[in-house]
Length: 469
Image (tube, rainbow, N blue to C red; front, side):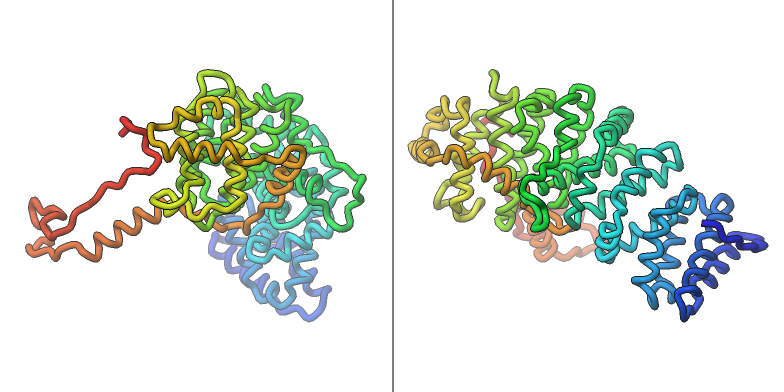
């Protein structure tokens, strides 16, 4: 994009003032809009080295245009021109600004990401990420973010998925492996998310094909293919997605992780991709999350259970010593209990939960010791009922993969947490009932909540193991 702009600037403030003037242009024709956009890109590119030193500066430049009269009066045309510029531009400085504009605009207006998909931008992003990896690190990271954001809100074109090369997928895994010593490196998160969203797109293509997809057209899942062939070289990715599941509160990202885990645990060549210790951490995470999910999170709970079965049945966890056997049986029994505290905690048992829990309990190393679950007759009877659930044969696997594939949630929706809700409720009660302070400093030395008739009750988890704190 060549367009000469000549300015004499004395300081940074003058740069921002001149930029305000450029985006304030009132254009009555496409030709004038094109001139204004060329001035905008050329001006910023010319002075990027002098006044734009951080990602915040790039974002500020982007917002100047997106919040301008020029953009608001001609949104569709300006968006399409920016997209066309991405297809043609080669200058790293200008590319950085174009990518930022599309990313920030698309996050607020999904129509931008949809327009990008229609214009074939996906493969251009793949090309830039792979071939321009030695350019500015900020640009490279933003390219990863843009590819992820545009891919997670829509179905990608089949012809684009087919053209993704194995080398590109291996490159993404290598990026993560190369950063294994720094889990907080800003490349980790965007690169992992790209791999997760590509896996979901492959799953959708295979198990939930679009109306225009020919039934005989099969697309190889390149993410699973690479891990099947070279998983031992890319162990850091596995470690990181378990860590991410442990701390992630966005429902859509949890689902992306669970979808990949499901395929890994149901594909024989990747049964033992993870280290055994990492699998044990995953069991702990899944137990905690299943206990913590609110009643409204039924579909997410079902997805966890669909992943739990192959995790227990196919991986190294099937070999002694069996990790958390009693805790797992106790959890599964509680999830299908009727009446009392357990039903209050998990809600009424639906048929899907009953079927999925029954499948998990039928894992041989859990089934063998089911009668050792506690001394109470109720616990024994509940477990026997679980073992009596009829699990369909040939269709069970195909049904589960379709159900896992089609689970979706809007970006930005957070998963509720029973623990957070309970903690917040207790804090609200304490604030409402806390006694008035009586001294001049607002403090009563030695004051305890009991002094105001308030007692705090430390509730125990219904899952707490006897003898453990």
